[in-house]
Image (cartoon, rainbow, N blue to C red; front, top):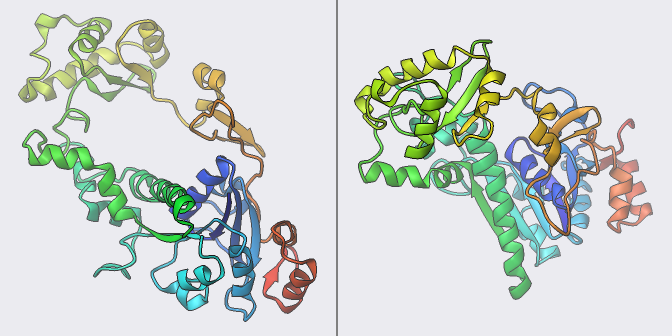
Length: 379
């Protein structure tokens, strides 16, 4: 599968990373000049979301810039873009331009609010899309403001992963129809989709105010607790038999606790649980829980995951170019996924990638000489 990724931030790169991890040949189109990252990272070579593909630097405002992209589109199965609605049309690489060159192309579009509707042109970030979806109102502790769940629900789960799913579904359909189509993925809608179960719970009256429910930090048996050494363990003893094992592990007697699901007593029970957990270190609790059905795990820090015995046995994390990062997932029995290219600098593979996809060398040289494309370190 060949994918053209028009460089963007957040969900678009995550979608392209997923496809590249699973074996797609992805070319990322970066700006010829002025390419920049948004967020705390300032070095393209350490931007893990960009792993697994080659970078071609193109000036899309140069007269020949769109043609460089369209020459790749002719040979591609998928294009991914994350601009505001209408931008790629103005640049000359919109769906109609691309489908005129390749009718089978799946054109994946990633936005916050979708390609149409009153908010289509409204700016925002993950927190805004998740808030608008209704999901942010459900996340957080009782009596506190809604808590942004990193960028996991909007950018990555409801955005990039949903777009990758849509792209693959459209590719499957195109095998029968012989036609491409546009995949319109909106983070607000994707975040809402992730929350489907909870929308149902609210309407049936079994889900109450934020922070007072089973999996939103309300329940004493489903939360994270600080240990004696200032680290944390997570417990999830929801079912009655798991709960019984948990309170036994904590050294608590059933008759000294209210009933498991007496929600009015949950705040007091959490204080009891917290006091019990503070009696041992994190690793002592993990050792004590080994072999027991207590649903207790350590809260690992990012710099600890690479040394965890289970992660090491599974190869869940890999080190590439000196950076530990999650390995491709899921696992395949016959065609294992790998990361074969570290994050590139913009334009690092301009000549190599274009010619590998069949663009004549003389054409690439002419575009480079005219300034339509750029190789890292030139100009």
